[in-house]
Image (cartoon, rainbow, N blue to C red):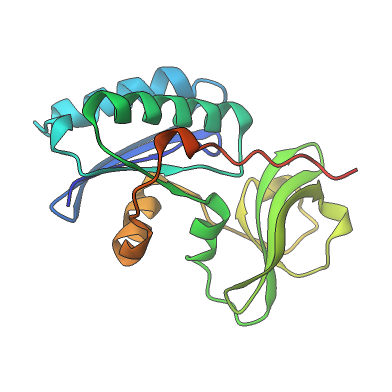
Length: 198
């Protein structure tokens, strides 16, 4: 199975290529607001460097958030354009679910991504199972559980471990969860934009 995985859910632009179920290349760079420029270049470079035909892809794996508004929009637009051009499906992956798959904790904890000011995108879990919905809220409103995620160094008073979302993790996630490879209408795939709670 040949996969192109794209993660632009944070300030890191990340693209990975998987050929015959094996990861062969990954490009990533911290870009802040330059996802559009880097995403096209990284994809072109990764295809050319590995002498790979983009038409040989089976799926495009896309992290759909929650996360960076501009990053998610860039990743979604680019992936849809490529999908239409080569006639290959997109498999959307929730960023918080992806991070949670990398956590081993039997207690209550949060998976979170920095949003802005003192806001985070988050969901509570217990022993790997989700509790409630995903939200964008002030971190001060949450319990003093362990946090896992990205950008949380902005809050030195919480107990957090960094887990970066990345296209590399997307590849590993989808290879372990092949049941997620279901055909979806491309038009129905959209980023997860969470509005902040007041």
